[in-house]
Length: 370
Image 1 (tube, rainbow, N blue to C red):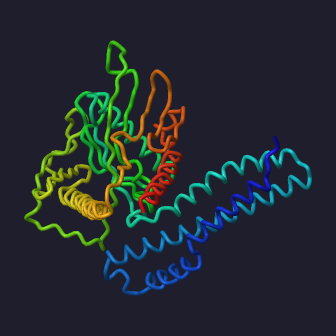
Image 2 (cartoon, rainbow, N blue to C red):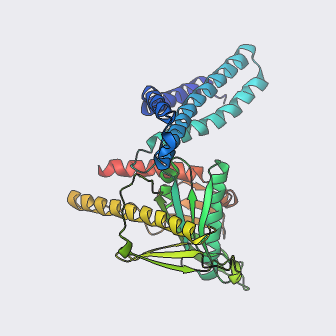
Image 3 (tube, rainbow, N blue to C red):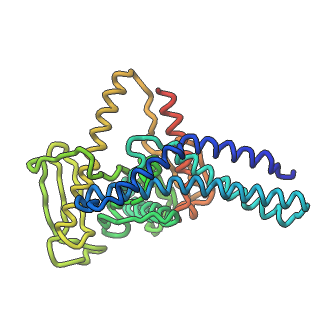
């Protein structure tokens, strides 16, 4: 059956109209003009923290506008290509248009998902922590596989990442790891990845070649910003210092530069060892501690609202995704039923389909209980 370009292009136009309405390009233009004015003030850098906030906000706003306008331009180019191919009855041109259409449909869908991210912290960068669960050495190896998966996903999108802490397991893999994804809307996208992940495979660590099920937990929190009102009394913190170490106990340095910070009232613990100095590690640990306390405060507020609203079914199960490598090949999200038969691609960072379906599912869940 011949592809109906007319209907396909009409559907894309309808989606882009919705994206533009949500984005509010006129309002965005006014915001950019205001930020540009503030960024050009001669005393901007008298307050470095405020200056960083202004320039970052300006960069995000420009990127948002350019993303929408650029997608409009790509759609216009595709319409022109289709028109040329149809007028000249040129099969090669129409084949090119069909390939471009497939790419553009994915790009527009991703942009549409971005407009759904309206949560309070969705625009933030993200702090991701992965911990090995049940399953012994296989779980530690799985934790390392997941870390690589998310870092490869970020790399595919040109998102900067910073590994903040790694705790290696004795035989292989990771006990835990924490890293930042420093990009706008990183938290909004990755927040749907939080939960318990399960791996089923023939264990490479079992000399009898038996099938092993292992688990890893993924936690995603928004990165704290300078204007967030989380103050932690010094007496509420216990700070221990120790020497950083790498795989197998190999010494990273010979000074006590690593930091373990404990919030005494809640028992929350944050470890940082990947910066060069104790001061840097302490600052990084405090920032993540503030982020976790901020998220906990919001969760407590949400729990109070939930209790006032009455009994609402839980939306997250104990395991949210299964990665099966034996006896068949499949990765399936148990919340959305989104699945793929190519686990290798998933572990190489191709998780946009899972993230997009997760965001749409999350929005639907919120509407259902509203």
